[in-house]
Length: 323
Image (cartoon, rainbow, N blue to C red):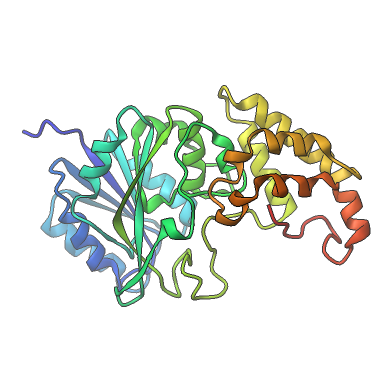
């Protein structure tokens, strides 16, 4: 009998037939012996369900659940996590490929942290190496300040191993968020996260993917995931301000200063709060992290003044802004 803790791979699928067998084979090839693969399909119509059921018929470690209706990726991941039994949970996408040592390596690294995550190697739709890592596009954050997740995120779910206690603390997921971004914030707000610079995931870039880190397709969300308008930014800050931790007073003050910025000519308070944690708050943005003071000072001019000076950009207060 294995003495290793149970790790649950939480795989969500939706019309993933073209790439799913490669991913399933890589999951079954993991060199961690005490393993379960929990799969929830979100209403696929392309043969994905048949592939999953065939794999489950050959390996008792695989459990397949079929949704009667489409939940969307956020609720589907939440459901998949709730069905997992492991002490550790590894979120999984349907179209990637995992190195055999991924789970063992992340488990060895996690220590007392709530979460560990690794680098990823970009591959194209055909599985060819694109010669680039995620860490070359995003600055990977490792630290103790959850302010690093206000404007950006370096943690992709496919690269994560999380303690069960973290997942339970993070659920239910706030509406309108990305589960990996939210879980990373909760991790740093509590026991912390650790980054491993090994590319243990081959992260497939293709037209139908949820994310497009390589920037090859249009109309697809790019990483790091970013709120696309002022209202969305405000809603995200409200979520952060509502999470109880030692950092909560900062996020409550940040939310109040943001609200003041949207109604004011000038906003020195918001600038002061951004400068206070400037090394963290722009950490995952390679461009902004080089000039964090400049980025923070851009908020000195309140939205009331910006609407007056550049009305074509701030007509309704919902337009995208740079952070």
